[in-house]
Image (spheres, rainbow, N blue to C red):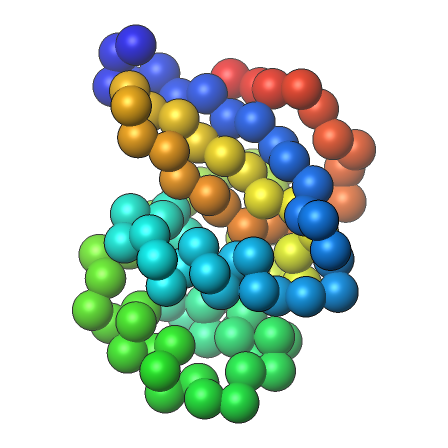
Amino acid sequence: MPADLVSVVRVPYESIKSPLPVLSTLYHNPKTLLASPIDQRIYKTLLGLNNTDVFHRWIQTHQLIPVTKPDLVYLQAPCLYATRVHVNTNEWLIPYFDGSRLTESEN
């Protein structure tokens, strides 16, 4: 698969009441694709994290890749879904909420 060909698959969270799936991904996968650090600060506040300093340090010490996609609103609301992005053999999990129905895949 060419590096510029990205396959996006939307998957529902097992539980929309818990931020643990996205937090687990953020802490354990240094290549997680996220929006800007500003958006992440908004998001961590929405999550109600007790230790925001730890999360902020994670943001500062990992290389964050800006993502833009018109139909997705990144990290602006508690996430109901995540987007799995496959590029070559790499996979990233992007949390988002856009209010749309789940789809099999999109290019």
